[in-house]
Image: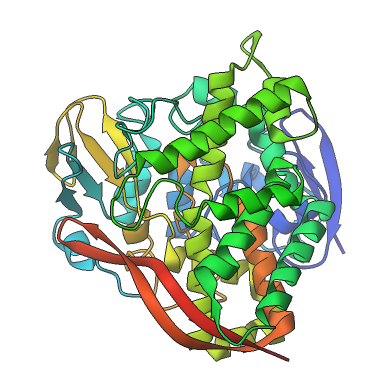
Length: 103
Length: 380
């Protein structure tokens, strides 16, 4: 089991535990505020926008062009932005803290 | 279903059409559609009521649809009043009620040898499901079913003012009823809402309700009817959903991409600009062609095939950006429950007869659904 923390826009940190699936599914199933996952994870809605801390960037594969294109038109996008639906849970993420981009 | 926009999309990226002497430049490429949707300051929704709809409704409607025909920041303020209500379809009780409605309609369909899907399946399904979104008694759906398949359109004319009046008068009456006797329904919820230190006016509530009725009627009917036709023609797809129910979510997204029940939506241009190196003048119209963008081969592999478990699917069938569809949560839940219930109860669907509903956009003809589709359902 991997522990993953989500820091929401209002400053709350929600600690979750997951084994497999995407970070969007994990956040949505744990009612993390600001992660809606409207499209269920097919990269169509950008309602799972998160920031990955610079020191954790290497723990994830680089974003696909389609993910980058989605983020290009999203509010609050920075160089640390990712879509949680495109990121899979794995062992290297244990105890990571991710920041939710939207309210 | 063919992609009638491919040639124009590849050659120039846009298509010019006339619409009641108010021409429209249809934007066809996926990237351009998303870019224009994002640029709400240049491509406006808050124009004269009815003008961003294609065909234009300026001659049959004065009421502004809210939040659809409003630009930021007011758009966001209106939308904030409604977001939570329109996310109710995710609640377990809502899903259970929706499942009961759809199971009942499928059970009825299994009892007949010749089912006309548009009138006898899709319309009742859409109407009964809408009672959940409005949180009103299911019996009210019988009134809406009696209006027929098109609120605004009759068979021989694109815009039918007399049919539009039926809806507007009905909504006026329901608003007065909710004022007299407030309940837990959407009318009452809107009437009680605080907006910028005041209550919403009756005209504003009417604008939200027109959008709720009109935006989710033909679109859901087209989606449901196309899905039944597709499953009839592709029994292996129904089998795949039976064997792998976990793909239901991806299947919903893929079918809505492929069918794109709403072909396009307009915007009014606020300043002289360019789209695809084509000059667009201030106060003219463009449209964001979701149906074309959803077949763009630069984004989607095998765009003209249904890949039910398509993993990455950045479709724009529910719009894109600020004005993405407010009813999408309801629509997605309806589509998911429909696929699940069909896969549980139906073994095969036989197509008996069909009459396609083909839209004409200038020289381009697009099949958007069916005027009639006769089938028989066969149980497990």
